Amino acid sequence: MLLTTQIIFTSFHLLATVLAWFALFKKDTRLYRWVQTVFFLGFVTGFVEVLWQIFISLRVGFLPLAGSLEVMETLGWVLLTIGFYVWVKFRSYLIAASLLLLASVASIAALLQLDKRIPYEGQLSAWLFVFHILILLFGIGSFCTAFFSGLLYLISKRELKAKKFGRFFPIFPPLEELDRLAVHSLVLGFFFLTGGIGTGIYLAHVFWHRDWLGDPKFIFSVVTWTWYLLLLWLRHQVGVRGGKFFALIVIGFTFLLFTFSISTLWGWPWT
Figure (cartoon, rainbow, N blue to C red):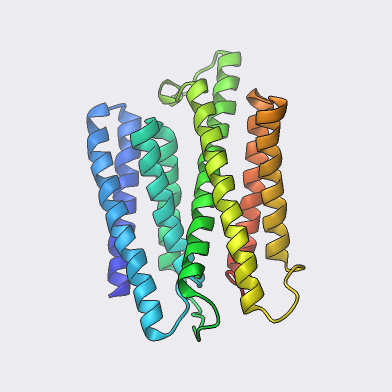
């Protein structure tokens, strides 16, 4: 049953991704409504799938969203959800399509995982743990959106300066919109990451019976949090804008990706 729902969920990801990129390549705005519909169906099926995974895990005695399979699958749903929001709210279609592509990769990776489940014996609040994982993943998705915004900003600036425009340049969002979306995503990502680290500290204190302050995942998370705090300070207090600011966003996301990879490969998140 779980494999069937995962396949359905991944199918919606792939369908939305193919349709979105086809619409962008063809520059056919009539297809955008179909993309939005598939987006919505993927959001709903993904939401049901995540709830079903949580329910089944608790029912058979495992900690929900604790394995790399569940994390990758939930990350796929989070990226699709944020992409849906960007598509509808900001109409930044190229960024939304990029998020969809990553969502598809995450979903396929989840299908290929042979996961080790963590027995749940009531050591900590399962629902607080689920909340902790979800807000961390939404933080990663928000920073991912800021990364794509920054990358498109840097590409747009370079093409405008060189006066050599690529195929996708006509559908690039305006620089002002990319700037607004990047800052909006940074603020949301920082909020989610702060909540994730806060709940993680509490859960680590409850779950681990040893000193966890020196754990690499905790250290990398704090360094990442400090980097994004510095970015927001540079933006709002110092007034750093333009290419330098977006280059720092790209660097920060690269480090965040490194942190997430370590957490996933070396046991997510407490083993």
